[in-house]
Length: 68
Image 1 (cartoon, helix red, strand yellow):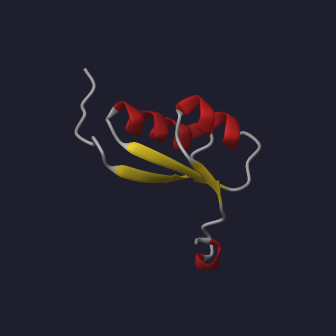
Image 2 (cartoon, one colour):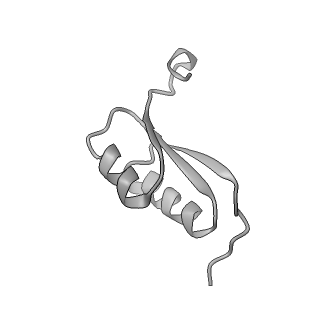
């Protein structure tokens, strides 16, 4: 049984294109959240975002100047 306790909440997932980050995005979706993927300019970002139906933004969060 899937909990919907995150219904309507927005979650920004850094490194959300693959591995653990993508798993987090999938789990957030299953629990009703609206995740947003951020990652370095990754080749798989557009495909992953389209598959999951979530927005994605290429950015390097290591520096606050890169986050707008």
